Length: 443
Image (cartoon, rainbow, N blue to C red):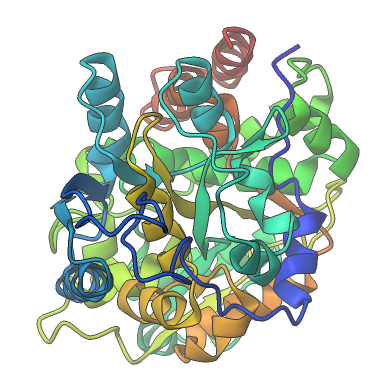
């Protein structure tokens, strides 16, 4: 049995998203004129504080967002200096893990939550912020949204964005191929793939070089094949994959792969790096569909010539699977957020609370092209595909955390690579299932 995690398996997060909580929180200590971590009775000048900050906002809009946030925060706290570093998303987890092993962890860093965070907590790398998150912040978010950042009853991260997943597509390319309705089941998805190939269009963009985009197809098929009870048990720590649904999901991936739906060279294509990435192919109308999370529009906007989100970008939910035990409205999702290293200064907590305020939440959603963690900031969501994704999220019967995030870094990577090996023809369905089971039991 893997260690149990209170993750977003997560009707709690759905309740948060549908609630009307206010999101105007105040950074800890702003009631006084003193800077973070200083004594309110002291008349001495506050000591200088310098913090390092790693994030994954490599696009022009996200870089500008963080520059402004840091400028606004340090204007309020002039004794604080924050040195940001943007790290490509696909490189982030490995780079952070290496920094933690070398005892050079940044003071503030992007946090995925789930098993990955639990491993950091176990290693003594992350600050417990349960008692120092401001009351206004906790009220703004509600308890449910903090579930993905809670382990052992303690909070270790500040949510920033919801990242449910769906299939983003080019309406123009669908029209060009004569597709008049979006796929609702696997049969209609296969029919769409056939029409796109007949029109000379790459049907589905896939950046399998980074492994996780390929594995997400397995996650989604599992969500459709397996019952909520089976999936919830897995998220809660069960290593028992004996239910036939898990192998059926592997077979579903193999069957889809047999239709040759992917872009040419998908095994060596990266997910988000440059115009030749899987995201870049969709952004520039060189492929028609991509299975991705809510960050997709923001990523695409950074890969087009005019640096704008494609005007024809739309979204449909992952299709239903015939005979599947999962609810067809169920969604796979995660949360992006931020943590402080264990011995970071108090200013780090103040920065996290600052990020939770409505203006920063709205700015984050706009800059990243994503869904804000705060219900109060959802007015910033105007992009059509994201509005569709938000509606689906709010109407989902249940939402499940990314499997690799739940498992943790090493086991998650093992699962993801097993799916890549299947797509590459290096493993049979049975061998892939055995590799997945081995990865899960390694936790």
